[in-house]
Image (cartoon, rainbow over all chains, first blue to last red):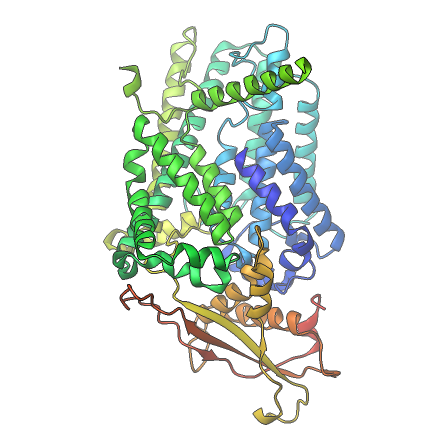
Length: 369
Length: 227
């Protein structure tokens, strides 16, 4: 959810720059991009056609998918489409990507394997409103209503069309994977998702075979848990690797490292603020050592429920400051969304309850006046 | 005791099977669960080896790791590390309009490509990646794929890198210079170190050197799509 918000906001921010960054006016022309991707085997839909309309509709579609995933409308299908859109945008031009794009790129793939629409989503609301449904009802897994099957048939049809018409230029090949688990065979990956969605839906509706249901359900839970664990370890890795390399740097040791990026023209949208912050050696020292300490300590402290809250709060504050001072808002937001993975569902729900209570109280006050 | 559990909890409780499921079903679930866990462990191991500094294990398993991670799981988290950049780098371009005089004296003045970027970034809460990254990354891509001084390619991507950098520059320069179509273009990078603060030690390792590229000839084909 957080990631789709970041990606959607980024796409809208770059709306006026979209053609130069990713479209027909890009210095990385489609021919150049194809030449580059042919060696890397990256997946993008933007190079399938040189038509301006193809680009514009894909870009629009990417925004729509982000919004729908954010709202949680058919979360399962949308997460797959979201992944395809993120990969398409990122791989179209890798030379305008920063760390935030990297985080999005990875998380978009992992999100497909998680059940990210369980709590806050239109899907969950629809499930709750079903006869006999409640907030705790885990079954049925699939979203009630007719739009599900329609979406399923539609996506299957589109995938088949893209593959058979040769539009994809070999990017949807069944693929000879060069390594185990590699994503070179996109056709296989996408058809597997499609088949899984169909199976889950079909078994729930038509066949009440308890064993098969149990297998499907168990595997679903297992995949979700493993994907969440992979995301958690990935976030730990980001911090610990960043810390690991920093410890090797003489400037980080000297306690002056933070001074330099804040004096680079490319990273100082607010030079007066940056210079004021770095005017005092004590402040620079504290931030420099504090950053390294936080990053190195992250994987060790995050699994302790008491330390975790302070740690996550500190990191979110640091990311927010960085986002403004260095002009990296989307990187910061992506990292904050990644940090949020460690917030337990319970406390997120409690926060939501508090918010809704506050809203009710405000409304009551207004009506009383 | 309840507070002692690992507090990273997934929103779904891990109850693999309903109690009524048959033994075969439970067996299948366990087998699949083991497979899924092993896959995750394999994936994470590959990621760890990919992001760690060069070491004995990364050298031993380089091929397997690369084929698993590339292209979609590629990542690099050396953020501002081991040392942050300590140089204000700026890319400049100058042009010639008469193709038959390769003499540098007929060249135009140097035009700042970075200056526009910096102006656009100033006082912006969300600067565009076009200003922040396009020139910078295009230059890095070129520098990474070409040997300095001789400017000979060192990577199969070298041609793409050179053409991309040229087009990034040409897009900003436009087709004409003082009413004449541009025939050749030359790029250079200048390096202005951030002064070391009074209380700091000059210990950084930023070894970026200024670099001037050879003259490149420009044709209409270079401008396809970017005018």
